[in-house]
Amino acid sequence: MARSILVVCVGNICRSPMAEVMLATALPDNRVSSAGLGALVGEPAHPRSIELMAERGINLDDHVARQLSEQMLREHDMVLTMEQAHSDYISDNWPHARGRIFRWGHWDEIDVPDPYRRGEQAFIDALTLLDQGLEKWTDKLRQLG
Image 1 (cartoon, one colour):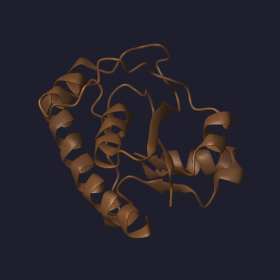
Image 2 (tube, rainbow, N blue to C red):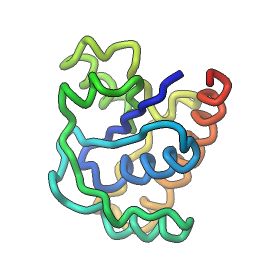
Image 3 (cartoon, rainbow, N blue to C red):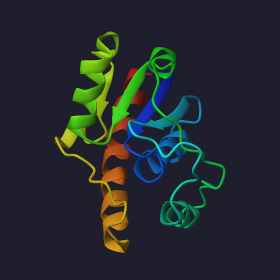
Image 4 (cartoon, rainbow, N blue to C red):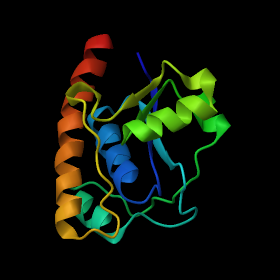
């Protein structure tokens, strides 16, 4: 089973931080972290991401954006990306990670679009897709567990 999971998006302030804390809450025995392909390094999670998680009783206040690195990829059993393009980029640049990279929306063959600078509804839509993927991944990972 994947005991350590890395969630990746672009800036590491909207989608992947929410997905990280959602997955960590659902699978408390796993180590879950996140990073960005073009991270806004050192920045907190987007205020709307923090609010949406707070509405669920999940704290995202301490998140700090991090840039994806070779070391992170080596330290995690599985990588979950928000978009197929992210998976392709990681596979192309870090071939050793192939076979451990999956899209968050893998089971439904969907991407989770970036809500950054796109307004309230984009965040709500992204969260709906994150919930959908979370349910499928937690079921699959528990089955393997």
